[in-house]
Image (cartoon, rainbow, N blue to C red; front, side, top):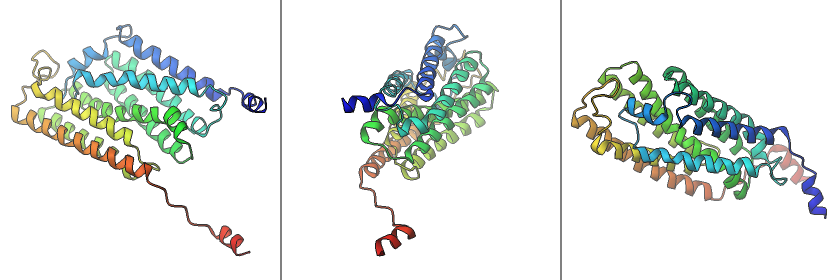
Length: 291
């Protein structure tokens, strides 16, 4: 009875209800957009604004696991033993911000407001990475990580890649020249690789999931460029008949960076499971030990 009373002592708070509501609204709007109720679907617009870094269609299937895992987070954080968890306390504002930006992105992208949708995507990225950084400064168990914290790495990793694609779509929307489109593609690859490196070596806790998702997305880019049928479709927006040498170079670059991200994911895993060195005692603790 004592254990039961202890659990009941933690009531549901505003954070718990806000997290659940944010998830449900985001889920409803995202999957509602697949019907075309808000405008053109993501699939139709992805084909219209096909870029050098747009992944193959199968790569987008990762959105299913993202929503499932975030659904697990939304439900788990309602249970008494997790309601006031550190992850919930520090992640909530960032999660709500990410869901808000994602809802705005869904609506603006469907209406082909590409400029607005790009900055909404940046907002999602900063919200997720900010939440990951803030949460990882706090201690949490492996159980808490896999149930409450890890879903945001899966989502964040995909948004890193999606932001790169949106960056190139923005240039395509304004009918940038082939030279600019190629430069944007290379800059996108640099941005993805840089963020994976940062999350491997500079984050409070090395994050392998983001590296694995980046590997998945870049492998999707490489796969799409094998035949490049969508890219070479004359009816697409801002069409340019890319020379095979350019396409092959981008494809090779995507393959190499995909393998690099996979390697970094392995490094991040090893760094995460390695025993952490104890922090040095501060001056107060040293004096206390001497006494």
